[in-house]
Length: 209
Image (cartoon, rainbow, N blue to C red):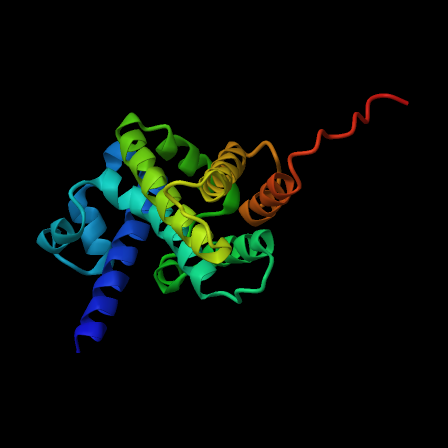
């Protein structure tokens, strides 16, 4: 029974976080209140406050959830799969929409990216995103260390890989919301991880004959 209760709590937390993202993207930072987010999920503001202390924390949790999911996938995946292949497969799976997303579909891609761009530029969100990123990076380093037999606290490799994966994700997200790359988040993240995995080779200069 306790396992079912925990799964329900996790589902409610995920739904509240997604609703916070969706509503803020659609209506702007100042256009969304806790009451709006709670109502979108069908819970009371008091229940919302049992999960998150602020709107920024709820939004940042969406980012954190994906990164923690990547670490969990690494732990559960085939141990003989090459590390960067395992990381890429796990990262791609985190971009798949969950049931809470299916119930509340986003806007058209261009409008969605534009709204994300405005939301992520909000100063009130920056501290929570940074905190989530550091938490996720530490957990990812631990998962990488388990796969490679390293010490995540003392050895350089798992921490560098985790930091590189988080950086690839952040750069891909920035390019996606800017809209300049004209590529999906899935394509951008896959390319970013592939570039990091191959040692960031210098791109060929196509301007010379």
